[in-house]
Image 1 (cartoon, protein in one colour):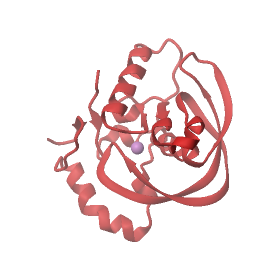
Image 2: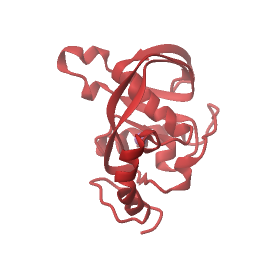
Image 3: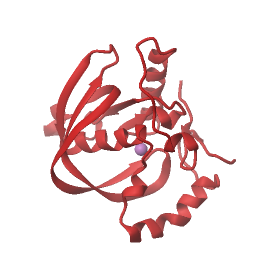
Image 4: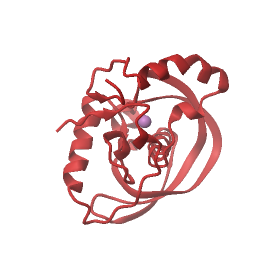
Length: 185
Ligand code: NI
């Protein structure tokens, strides 16, 4: 089932999400619905708070955006109770967007590599290192479970430039080609 994506301004997006246990009610269905919602909105990742659940869960599929010769480097994974252990490497700029913040994109600087510990959908432990695009999407989704949005990481001038658009989204005056749940409608 496609779920509505919670839009900028929704308090759940600013909460630090909680860890879950394997007996979390409806987890498998939630994950299935998140995949469906993400693909319907043409996203490469989505975090549980974006569908209104303040839990430490996000999913990523970067295979879709890898260049053909690098397709094996893409990942399709579920991250539960993730913890970033360290970020290393050079800072690099990449233009990010977010399903919760329609029609806004902006350059965000992040480190190149990330080491992350997490559980997969079978609650098996992993400790892995990712870099490049994979790291970038992980860092963006990880921020969601920490209550951080990419627009908070933009340069001051860019922040000013998008302020009106952000206010419009908060006021429910934006459109998206997928189901979205504004604070006020
Ligand atoms: Ni996002």
